[in-house]
Image 1: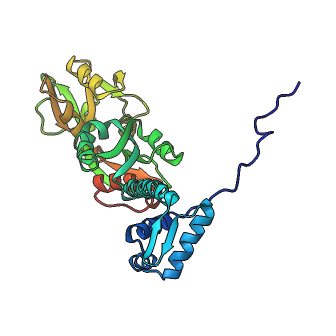
Image 2 (image 1 turned 135 degrees about the vertical axis):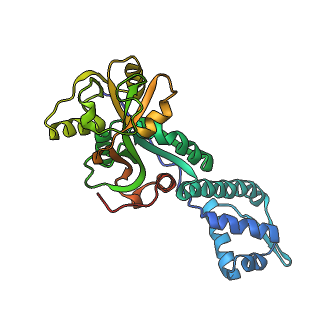
Length: 315
């Protein structure tokens, strides 16, 4: 038993009418001026070309739109009805062009941004609101991910712009500088390292650590530094957030390594001391990454331009 499609009995109801919006605009001018010649002057056209457009429009609609007389032209009943339609169509197209131009100019649109936790907590809390105030019709969809995942997502087209550690391998992406951060040791107020103006990473290895999860850049750099010293980190606890690290360090579980901007944003002097790490590797850069700046939506380009201090060569 078969089922007949509704398309099986479809019959075309007539020819497709193609109407040029420019012709509608000219028609409105003719009606306003009540003259083909004056309309032609306003549109910088020959009167014969205007007459041809009106004739083609009448043929397309199968209706006489203008009555010609010695003093000029006047619209017929059909012409008067077309005037109302034409005004609506021309107005709609003008609004459409204006709306679309906002996308091309970057004043309207949406930007998919993936950022690591340091960027969100330490920097974007000020930079993002400033961008949104400048471009109120741009929607930013911000998600927090690890730096390696951000790089993969950019290459897979899941995000327009990413903010991640420059130390993360990112070959094939265009990049721009964003912010620099420095790693610090966070310790309880009564800790042996509290109050020092700075310490080397080796000085922290005699104490228990509250460490970030193994996929984080800070954990990776810490492990590499310990291996270079032929030492191991005495990890008492691993956490996945800055809040958790701050809480556990304050409770005396161990010392923690964080970025200076992040701990400054979270620090409330609640029993914690911040001690800078003096090692060269403790200086880190957050960069902006994207697949191809020229191919980005204009709103995404505006986002990059707002946050960056200048684009870098392809990574």
